[in-house]
Every structure is written in structure tokens, then in C-alpha cells.
Image (cartoon, rainbow, N blue to C red):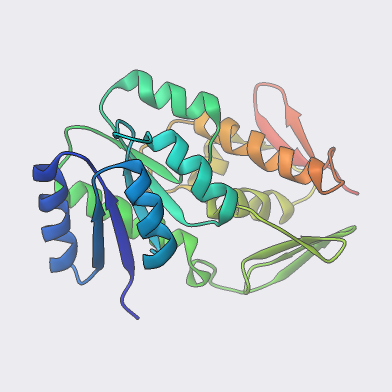
Length: 226
């Protein structure tokens, strides 16, 4: 099945260039030049991944991301024009799956897109398994986490983080290892793990398991045995 990508960029030159390269790679594409149109297309086009600029008219990229992630686990790659925007993304912990700083080459973007799509798909797991931790069940075949049989709405990166931690409960795992396990081809820094982990812990707390993941000072994180 042809994978679909939504390009959200108000600069027509950048958007057209990205679309040209993506179509040459065999992807189906749609383009939006403002945030409101992006959400309309996201609803109807149902893309597998969104390439999302931050500085958009009508509704900025951060608001677009918030809406998307509140409704589904669609993969999102942010395009950022300034280094401070990366800091803002990480600080807000909104759940973007990757980011690329401008200027960038279309080939670099395509490499990131392929990497994100690989790690967010079912085929990212060589050996499907089900891990159970008390009331929590992590199913890598369905890419689903349930707490007391209720499904948890995790982003692909959050799922990968939880899965990697859950494979060895009680073991302290470094941020670098978690970064490699959840975003191996990304240019993100280790602090990006903290941002995704913050969101993951919040979702677990809301599901009734607030103390599952423990911070290990100066190292990283570990799963506390239920």
C-alpha cells in the first residue's frame, strides 16, 4: 500500500521541492500552506506522516501538532528554522517524532521520513511479543498498550520507549540507549528522551499507574516492578 504524507509548509518553493522528491520515492502527497488547511487535509487525507513547519499562518505548527496528537498517533516530523525552536519543542514535550532544522536537503528529509515510518510501523518489531507488567499489557504485534484492558493512546516513540524499558524491568537504562531504541536515525539529543518520557508518564498516571517508570539520577530510567 502506498504510504501517504502531508506536507505543511507556507513557502511554496520548499513545499513543491519536497513534494517532487517524495513523489519520486513513490509516496502519495498532499500540501497545505496554513494550519487550518492542514487539519482539514489531515482529517480527510489520513496521512501516515505529516511534515510540519512551525511558522504557519492562521494556526501555527505547535497548535496543529497538539490537535493531531490529541486525536491519533500520526507520525510528525517538524521543520524548524531556529535552534531555539528545537528547545521549545523539547520543553513543551508535545510528542513530535523527529525534527529537522532548516535549511535541509530533500534527501535528508526523505531519510528521516523513511526512518520514522520504519520505527512507527508494526514491522519495526522483528519478534512480536506480549509483555505483561501487572495490569499493563504491551503487545508489539498490534503496537498497543492496555491498562486494565483499556487501550492507552501512545505515540510511536512513547510506545518504543515503554517497550524497551519493559523488556528488562528493574534495570537502569541510559538516555542514550533509550534514544537509540526509540529514535535510532534521528538527530535528536538525549534530552529529547526526557520530553517523550514526560508525556508517557503523564499518560500512565492518568491510566492509574503513576509510579511505573522511575528516574535514575545521572543515568536515565527504569521500570519499577508492579
